[in-house]
Length: 329
Ligand SMILES: [Zn+2]
Image 1: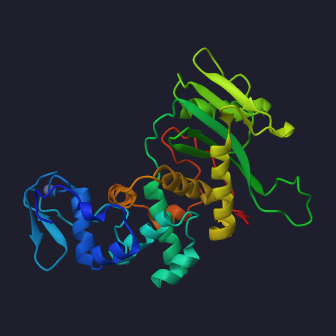
Image 2 (image 1 turned 30 degrees about the horizontal axis):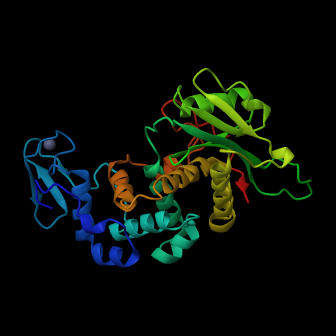
Image 3 (image 1 turned 60 degrees about the vertical axis):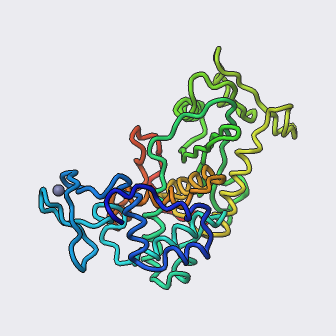
């Protein structure tokens, strides 16, 4: 890409597999596309921000005339130090967005012809990049619900929850979804989640009859419930069917695509599901995902496999995944 050419090519909206293969069948094409996304106003030195940069002959790099720094479009990004060709990144990202239930590392391993470890690491870096960094608070009418996620334990009754975790979700009607892993579904935790994810003037919050939600209403916000234990699912406009459809998606992905998800990484899967859900009508989802990838920070394999990864992910530290690597089957 030449300096000054400013817009990402429009022909790659509404991506499909054929377009993907046509548009991004070489490293040079992928690289050029990423350059457009990373530097829409022209290539700039990541070190000193100077635009006095020149391509380095026969290398995919640039040299900054101001500070002599040599860099490429992937320098300092999540692609950094990756030995994978960019088209494999592009294809993996496409498959992750395209598949309703998500894609397992095993499937990616076969499709991209890479090792399991490479596929696993790749999925996680893409997920980390897709994470919503500054989620806007929800408004209007918001459904809130919580669900247990996890497998059946052998020799235990149905009520056994020792190998399960709780996910709470809020969704604005015709708007975005926010998900979070919580350690208990008590009043304090659920109220905190609602306050952090909705505007104070949210018109209405719809939940089921769980006692822990009581008291969430105030003068600006109505709280209405459906009584699931009395088999009441819809009460006029009041229902939590939208957020419950997310639960069935989440559970089908865990059973269908991932088979086993470690609790430690469940938050990352939630981020991925959130991105897919929130971009379900976005024709530019693929471009927007790549834009996030090329602006996301590096994530090393060591960071990812560190015991603390996933326990503190948002700036305000609200994601509180249990420190536990037990697999959910
Ligand atoms: Zn520079």
